[in-house]
Length: 482
Image (cartoon, rainbow, N blue to C red; front, side):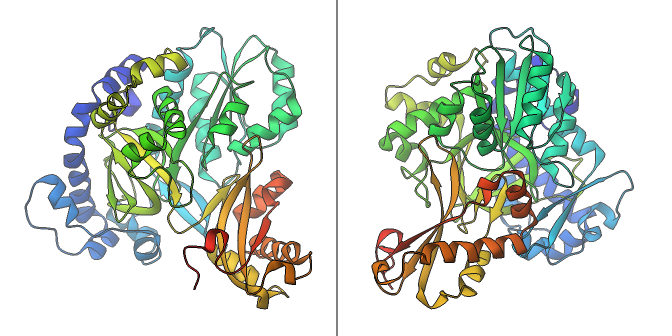
C-alpha cells in the first residue's frame, strides 16, 4: 500500500487492505531497506547511527540501529544534513510546529511523498463515506483545521480537495455553517477539525439532521462520550493519527476500531487483554487506529511507539523515530483471537456501524504522550511550561507538585487541567488561589507556545485552563506521597 499509494484506486485500496497480513510479513524488510537507504544517503543519519549493523534478519538488523527522537536527532543536526544527499530540493514543502519553548520546528517533505500521503488520505476518506447511505451525492469538504504554516490544515485541504468541492475557512464556526446554508442539504459534507471544534460547531448549529455530515478529526484524542454526542448530528466521526515530526496521517480510525474501542470502554477485562492494561498511564482509554504495515514499521520500546517510515520518497527519513507516545501495536489476527475469546464478532460489530469493508490491517493504539504532554485544539501543553508558570506565580511557595491532565464536561468536551499538590490543606489557603495559579500558567503558555496562542485565539475555551488543588499525598499524588 505504501510506495505506490499515489496510483491507488478505491478498489485497489480495499483489496490491499483485505490482504493486510501479507503486508505485515514484509513490514520489517521494507523498514530495513529504508534504514539502509538513510545510512547511505543522509549525512546526519549516517553520523547519528554510526557504522551499519552486522548482517541479520530484517527485524534484528533494524533493532541494532539507535532509537532517534527530537532531542537526540532533530536538535542535533541541521535541516539540510537531515535531507537525502545533504541537499534542500527547491520543490520541497516546509511546515512547522511549536516546541515547548515556542521556538518553531521546521519540517520538510518532498513533493513525491506529499503526493503519496495526500492521495492515501483521500482514498481512506472515500472508503468510509462511499459505503454510507446516499453515497452518490457530490462531496463538499469544509476544512476547519488551522491554516498557515501548520502541516495538518494545508495537507488536509490539498488531499480532500480531490473528493469534490472544498472550502478551508479554518476553525471559524460561522464560516463553516455559512457553507451549509449556501449549498443546502443535497451534498455529502465532510467537516474536518480538532474534536473540540466539532462540539463547538454543534452548539451553534443546532439541528443538522437534514444534512449528511461526516466529521474527520485529528491532533488529539477523543472520548467516546464526545463521539456519541457528535454522532447525534454527524453520520459518523473518525480520527486520524500522525505527528509533524514523524508523518502526516500515519494511521486512521475505521468502523472496526471505533467498535472495538467502544467494546473496550465497556469491558476493562477486554481492554486489559487488548492493551495490557484497562487504561493508559493517564487513566484514559487509548485511541485505536489501523495502519499500513508496508509503509510503516511500528515497534514498542519501553512502552513507547517507535516508528520507521518505509516510503522511498521520504526526503528526510525517520528511522526508529520516537515521538514519545505511549502505546503499542496489535496484529489483526491477534485482535480477532482476543475478541472471539470474549464472544465478540468484530466483523458483525463493524457492519453494525458501517457497510465499509473491513481492512485486515494491524492495529496501533495510543494512550497519549508519555511525557505527560496533553493536547487541546491541536495545541500541545508541555509540563515544562506549566512548571515555569507555577514557578513564577506569586503563590509559588504553596505548590509542592503538579500533574498535567485533561478534564471533560458531560458532553465529552476536553479542557486542560492542572492538578496542584499544595504543602498544606487547600482549605488553609484563600479561595482564589487556584484561579491565580491558573492565570500564571495560562500567561506562560501564551508567551511560550505559538500553538497555544493560535488555539486560544480561535476558541477562547481552548485557553480555559483549570487548576484543581489537592492536599499532600491525595488525589493523583497518592501514589507518590514524597
